[in-house]
Length: 405
Ligand code: 3PG
Ligand code: MG
Image (cartoon, rainbow, N blue to C red; front, side, top):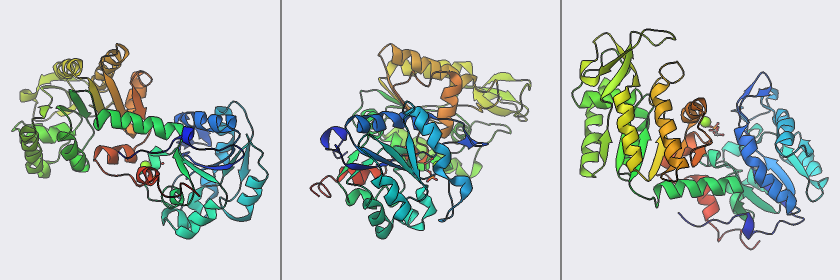
């Protein structure tokens, strides 16, 4: 990956810094349900404050239809943001461009912070409009992007704007890019990819890319059922994609060609339905009853993945291995997560995980802080695992442009 500038490389003293954050956090009944993204942004804001910058935070929130939507106002994030930066005051501008925004930014002294209203209240944001980007650029002297989780969007505040001002990665973006490149671009081997989730069809590009990159691919979740079908196993009433069997066969052949060892479940936890408290059975994969549903990997499979983890030096993980939202089908994911955490703690494994469900499953296992790096990015993490260039990362890597303005 190309080099990018960081906060150490830019002079921000007394300058207006436009900080692209991802404050797209889950909010329930007006209360932030998971503040991880806000907390992870705080060190960047604090560093900018220490350096005497005027910090102008901007973000999208939800998916408004290109116009104002009171239910998606970022005003609700002012107090949580203040809390995350040690109770410092955060001013709010009721529009992200124009007079309101200009006034709020002009009132800032070095070391002070303002938050602009939801960028997606303007159509120009998602359209990557040069005019909208110019209107944003008028509010700042320097651009800092700390929104890796939105880097897969070629939107004005992420793409066009990065070319209009001297641009750098914030601390969170820097940590995220460093972790991800260490895990896949130049990893300590063997590398094990642990991929779960429901469907092969939504992760085809990911699987094709990852097979060429890693030494071992362990697959769980309902997507494993489709690969088991391709290996001639019967999966009863389990969730699977019968029309993807041929594609799954090709993936297994590709893995074989590329010397990527594939670990599929050899046993499974089955039940007659997905419901809490339902009677479960653990069966060998060759003995899944016709009327049963596979809902988790079995103990042997978990142990096998654990053994492969112990041999690996690097782990990349996306997707839960069972129907983890419903106990006891979280057990396989939890066992593997705890093993990964243990090996990471012992300094034997570099472990990187990401994706919405994955983060929820790791949090439920209580080991989210014990892996080397857990990304809060959903779509961006997946696109990175597909080997795609993310517009937000590409724009930052383009250091020649905007550099001397
Ligand atoms: C996310 O939450 O995944 C990012 O903030 C991107 O949001 P989007 O999917 O609405 O573009
Ligand atoms: Mg999303």
